[in-house]
Image 1 (cartoon, helix red, strand yellow):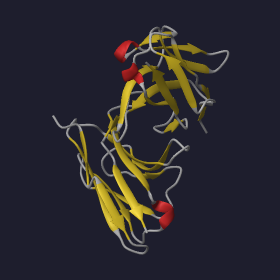
Image 2 (spheres, rainbow over the protein chains, first blue to last red):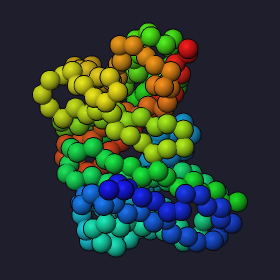
Image 3 (cartoon, each protein chain N blue to C red):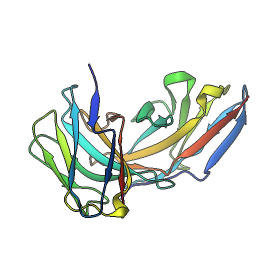
Image 4 (cartoon, rainbow over the protein chains, first blue to last red):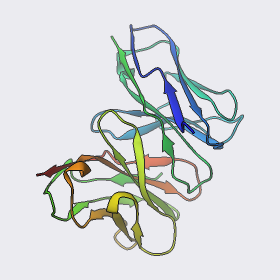
Length: 112
Length: 113
């Protein structure tokens, strides 16, 4: 039982490049989330998927797109990376409203 | 919209002394409250939660938190801090009517040997 896994762990992009961050969970959770963590700002929700087949915007969705590929996988895409997207990205999942979220180890992204 | 305030950037405490990390929240409905801990270069780990019931909640690693509805607070406590408790602590709140967690900015806890 690996929990929540994320790939890659580290990535450096040039401005304008695109990339997809991958997330998978093996806990049969319905809901999945993407956050970004910046110093002094806590975690901010980018997008979430309450269940397979649905996605919704969070607090900071601009510049990102997501795909809920199946119940296990939820990917985050940066179409044209900008330096402001330099951050640590976390994926999380949970079962029901009120349940705690389980977090992946994070992806550290630098955009130059 | 829900929000969380963690008023202190850093909390310094001597090993063996009580540790308190403060959190106040704002929601429109019934609050679901959480504490998470983050060690360097790691993801967040769940410590404890309050959904309903007893105001004093016990969690992992000897931590507990007290829900105070009148003061809209959910402070994290540990009776005797360990050096290994040094980490970043996040409070989070969810409005019972939606799926979205709002996090505080985090408190760095430094336990001094």
